[in-house]
Image 1 (cartoon, rainbow, N blue to C red):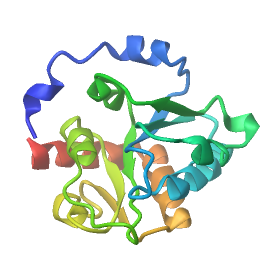
Image 2: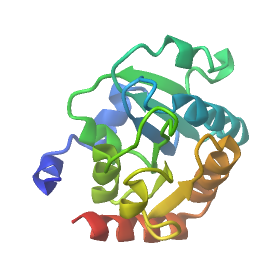
Image 3: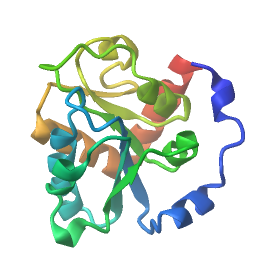
Length: 182
């Protein structure tokens, strides 16, 4: 990972305006829509959290066929669970986030060290990720974010809510995450 990738980020407000995001908090998963990633767990947890907290928007960023994932989002939440497709300058979008997420389909493959997690952490964002493959080598549970077991929607929703509602913990984890990567 090269910290130079974080130079020249787009202004926060311009990124928020580009996607019409008005909520205080933003949570994102950056991953292709492939069997290797687990958008189902992320989206089920996102729906649960969005119903509890009206001040959060969820982003799904990545290429691939997202139709099955879109079908998981109830109409009333379609304005707060956004599918952005493949994006250029994704680091600028990650920079507006409160929390980064990466859930992995452990039955499909072994995750290495995720570029998305490295980028979120370098930007000072706490992360919540599946404890699989190389992820536990990067993410220290309770220090730079949280590790969850595969397919555990409830744990993912719980950790996201915890980070949304506890600014002190969120800031401490984000600062620690940045120190690990930089």
